[in-house]
Length: 104
Image 1 (spheres, rainbow, N blue to C red):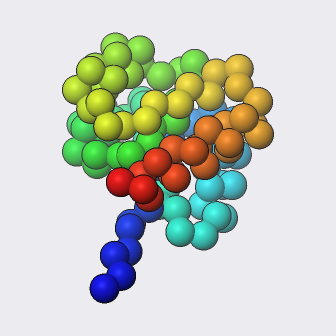
Image 2 (spheres, helix red, strand yellow):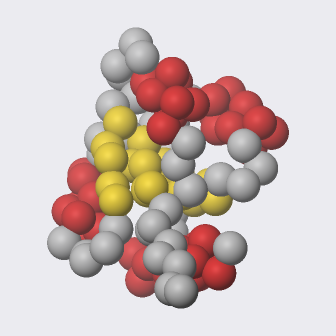
């Protein structure tokens, strides 16, 4: 019997040009589920909480209180700050996070 692991849901929290470019790249990658959330949307925090993502990628425009709350409440969620990170490093870190979830 083969068990199929569903890829983790990746949330892109923000709408900066870097995040939009990353979202496009991730959506073009087979077997990834990606949702972009606009932090200016009044329901953004609720969306993040309800969707139960495996990975949340954000940048400097993120609500730091929300990020801190997520890190406390959802220990299983991988939080990735795009901030000043190199694009290749982000993809490497993301690949490691996806591998971690596929082994679970």
